Image (cartoon, rainbow, N blue to C red; front, side, top):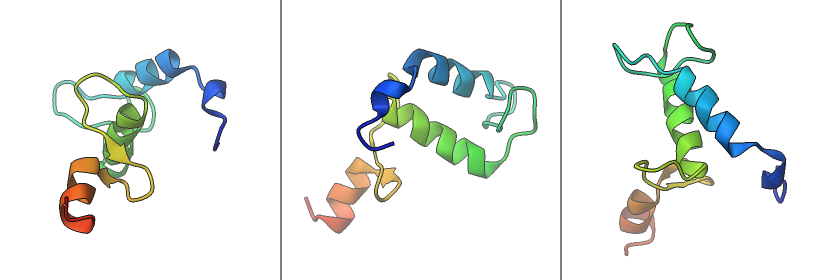
Length: 77
């Protein structure tokens, strides 16, 4: 997918991820109305971050960690 971000319809992908949320209990599932679990919750939030969804902190795609954490711990900034 490197250099192919233009292939992704960001609005539809954000909508899909948000449709997979369990608004009552929290978490994200692999499909709308399925059971939530930690794997899809983590990568759903990571996806929202990489899609620059408002209110979600930036995630470094190489480390799958918050950029703030990378800067503080790994890069000592």
